[in-house]
Amino acid sequence: MERKICPIGNSQGVSIPKEMLDKLRLHVGDGVDVEVNEKSKKITIGPMERKPRGIIDREFAGQVDDFIKKYKPALKALAK
Image (cartoon, rainbow, N blue to C red; front, side, top):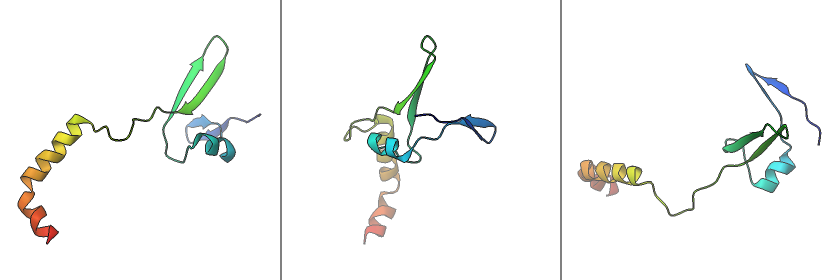
């Protein structure tokens, strides 16, 4: 499918048809991985590798734990 490069602010971009985004389950705001193959002169765009659900970043979990400990009385009062 032929597309044209168009100006986007101080950059340039290529629009991706909705049908293609739907096939890859991509939406506005999703991250994509962009790679350039210099040998074949091609650009590849695909969904970023998603982290499996259920895995929590340890640093973030520690921050949440610290927050709960610090504000436990306030959180209990709000829960009433």
